[in-house]
Length: 116
Length: 109
Image 1 (cartoon, rainbow over the protein chains, first blue to last red):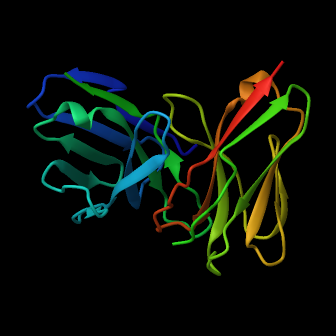
Image 2 (cartoon, each protein chain N blue to C red):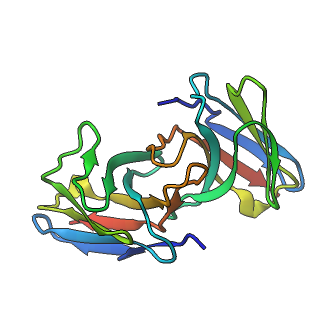
């Protein structure tokens, strides 16, 4: 149980275009979903926290108008990278938790974004 | 948020026991300690979680002293496939978990 999927697994796009990444909790309802970004050889950096039906909370330095997050249901959150540029190329990972006090985060497999 | 400190890297050989220690001096009373494993181009995978004393599952053990300011992940008899980055995080459900630098474990034949 507690499986999180991401789609697509990898995407290549041209500079200036927008890319949407989906994160789904397949067998549980996710109270909270998190979006991370990871550059090569570096650790995961939290970008934002989203709760179903409310606006996402962004980490300092993350542009909310560039990284649009929608958490429309308890099983789906989307991250849209708007007007992507080569420096946005990275590995994007989502995670979700069930809101139980002793629970952990369940991570998706990640999405590799390459902006040409 | 509690910050964690781990060794940057460790080397081991197949069949050995590996112990990775993490410091988290500012851990809060309601924080749990969770360890994740990450392979290249994959999302982190849950290994083990604990609050205090010792926790053991089919893949690892987690030792937490009484003051909870540190924890040690123990991997018994590692194999080449255990080569990965291991992250120690502290927090609880509903709280964002901050990733530290992680420990890059290299298992050699």
